[in-house]
Length: 460
Image (cartoon, rainbow, N blue to C red; front, side, top):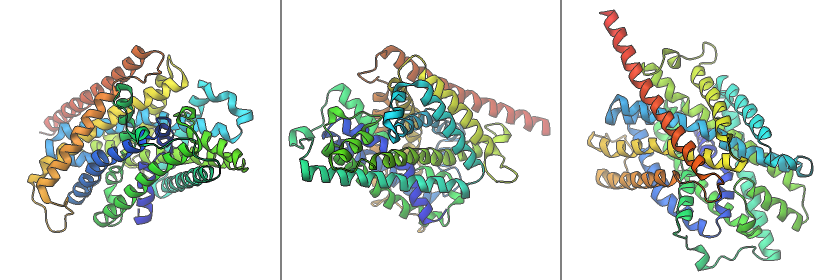
């Protein structure tokens, strides 16, 4: 991948339109939360990724960094939890895409908005299509990532433009007062902070494919900086655009963007915009899921090379040169989680559980990443290495801020949403399924070590 491909990859993997709807539903104070999350999580993460990917630009990224800092077990568990975090991530993204597809023909398809079967079938079909494209090769799969990135920009720009137009002609639907901008410190609102922090994850993913990036030491930093600026501006301006068009009380986490577009388009006399925006939002999220699928498949691939997973994971497809076993395994397990997340709850309840699970398993590897950043400051760095401004001392402080923020977010993610009808079941599913994933990872690691010892003894 070149500079353009990598920049688009960072946008499609680091920016999601679904978080704009989530933020707008919380009101104007979410703008301050966006800025806070960017400062205490994204900036430490981006700086850490910049230095670590410059020090060790190898295939595997996070896996390589954690293994070098803390040994084999930490390397494997960081890769395992990051990889498995996509199991609940894929259904959550596909649910959001499915909810927006309905707005292409709301009068005909609107009745499916609470139909669990529709969401399950849509998620399985799109997961299968994204997997197939990535098995055929990154040179093919990257086009879905690139199209997904463009499909994110266009709806975001439309939302911003229509919000400004509605404000100019009809007045703002939301009052942006100083009091409204101050984030609430109630427990339920603090839980919401963790979700917006989760939205800034993703800038580490391209480093998993270090050997497939042209001039990685130069290309990754430029793309990361440009992509990060694009992402934060889109989140903030997109949230403002929705709130200009709709009061927060009328915005939902699943369909807030298309609601804003639908209402505003009728007010300004261009109802034909809604189906186009609905389609682009759905396509952008499918592209984002495909980008993650491509990147994180490299983690079990390198773990297979190191013999912590069965040898098949470390082999490339004979024709397409892709880690096809990891891709197909992830698709199958992602399909299982589509059913598990839906069990015993509503469509919205399933979406919230999947998001919470994704936050916990996704953020555990960040603990390893920030800790590795601190530990690896002891290793010498040549003049070709991009360092955090201020050297090792500043780098350790930056990584410590990221580590504390990550720990705080994980704790908050254990708590259920206030409108969840079955809170004990929601907590049980989040904690139980997360624990199962971690337990399986520990078992696989020790089984791999045992298998390697047996093979070594047989050779002697």
